[in-house]
Length: 556
Image 1 (cartoon, helix red, strand yellow):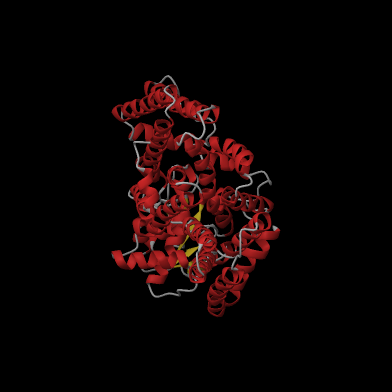
Image 2: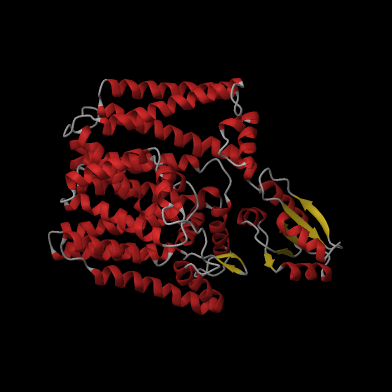
């Protein structure tokens, strides 16, 4: 306990929030400096460009004929940051996620401190910041992290409602909770209201915690959401209304074409184990011991209900993605954090509940080091070590090994992994829970900093369409560019050209009438186009090491 002054943190919540925010911000911001935008990020970057160019602020647009399927709060945030920093680029587009991710980590520390103890809050914040998927989404220009922040802020304010000493404090906290859920609605849609209301209703039914200001929690988000939706509907007309239907009613009931990412009901069980690694190994133990020891404690019930309600609700929907669970990651971190804090504070003696996951981490670090030795010496082939990856991903890894990873870098990684394995093993052998936790956090922090930093940058050089986009922009110039089929938004972002979207037949006819115009097409549609219009010609072709090859086609 001498390593950290937890009493000082308890007396100064701002210091607790500040320390955790700064550490998470540095980890997430570091990762924004390396890779080009992925296509999921570029589809949020394109609307920002349109907004800054004077287009609609109510309707985020991927291009002039396609509305983005999410409300505009993320794009407003990125637009403000771009204005303040001088333009749209990879960093300004990712800053909303970086700031929201760091703020979510800090809020987790504050909520953990309020519910349990400062050490539980601090450990929970460290676990959250170094969980794999949370750290990944904290470095990418996507709406998910901003959504998770507003959801957590709302839940934190609801807890403050119950702790308020007077009506004025209750009114202030309840109003802020309603505004937070309203911002969640403006970030990702109706789930920003439906999930909090369901979770809080279940918690109230189980615990009777006190009055919940449902009027403000529901009324404020509904007002904010409807105010935007009415303006967007007037401006967007039938296109906007159809998009809303597809993204709400059709998605919930599994009607095509909105039933994207359809997965079985149990999908989130293995997905959560992978995405919340390495800390997911603690989750079954944390839930089991927490249920046995704390199920009658309303403080423990709060993150438990908030976690399980969304987990079950999303499992019932046909469309599933691991990103959808991001709002409950802070709750998972809190459940694991309070479990670990019992050992750190001496309330429980070390047992297999801590020792086994620590040994597993040490063995994983050692195994990773041994694998790197085998790969660097040629004893193990990449295709054999990464048999579970697709052929294109194996090719990508082989390219990185051949061109980027020199022997000194590989051996530095080997030494680091073996050092972590040794440090964790010594801490376990000496039964020092603070050292075990510190080394585990440092190990996870290092892995994420490397994977989301230099490795992501090197991988991005092979995945990014930036070079081909520059050739397209130079070739097209001021002439008309048509797209057909699915053209990924990262190519459109880096080409930075106005486009018209047409069906394949319409695009072919257009080039025959305007032979000096251009068509951008993915390889999967090329054969169908040339079978109908054999007179067309390929002007440029990308040579992507993965499966997204494009052709720039003209009529002359």
